[in-house]
Length: 405
Image (cartoon, rainbow, N blue to C red):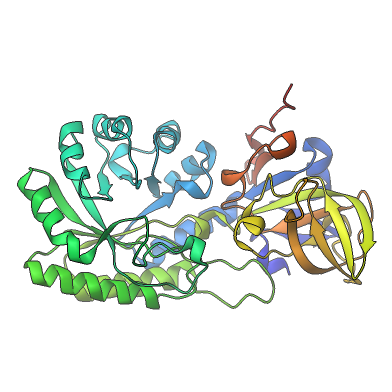
């Protein structure tokens, strides 16, 4: 079970600790729900990506969790920023990440966003549709990539799949040649191509299939792209029975080798988000009501779909541990729900726990990506605080919202 938690997670005297701090003590000071990020785990993930592809450029998929402290830490490890809105660019700026390392995305970029990218001389703007050629020129953008929709269906949930035909993202291969030529004729530096197939990719097979399509396309144009952006999407494990996934080092090496085989002189870019911060965090909740309803024992916690909408949104699976009795053996099979007015507010449909009681502390691992970043104030619940724990101590990196009044 601990392998799902951050690298520093351990059980001391029956209590879950992370980053050298007791989770019980953290909750005593900061309350619940509480998201705790481990600095050592984030740095290790960044170094694993860089080790697998030392010559590649790694940029953080900010959408996973936009936070200046986390992004500043990643920049210390040489990781730039993949940004898709004005807000995300402002996070990157606040974190001190140089615009020369920004990759600017978006399927519906506003004129303001394009101007902001141009004024800050962002490294690359990824054009997502043919009309962006003229809009990039007008905004003063200099260097661009073209996002390709390769028609490859990755083995992942349909709501986080992005490379299939009919996707709202990118330009189909049959339309791409005209866009490339028009961008070059308009005076844009057409640096290369971008492809991203979706999230939770458990291997590199779909990426290689997409690269095959891109290679045939560039060969037909007699054009060698200077940059191939292979996107992100590498999976993490959320539950003990999830299959093993490649390490960032293994995945980066395999994809970078595939790019080099097709375009020997191209610079490779990766845009990881989940695999940098997902396993680095856990969410702590306080158990409230425990009750039996038909065949199900429900354990209700003081958060739910407002701080983590992924289970309700697309059936994401999680596991859990009773953090204040982490050494106790599991004796009960329960479902974990939130406190919201929705039957779909279920965080975990089935998990074996040491029998929970009111006041217990529940720890849910692997909540560092796409939880707080998609959080809401449903039922007027304030969004949780987030902490960063590590050698430099414990820091609040996101304040708990006040109650709305």
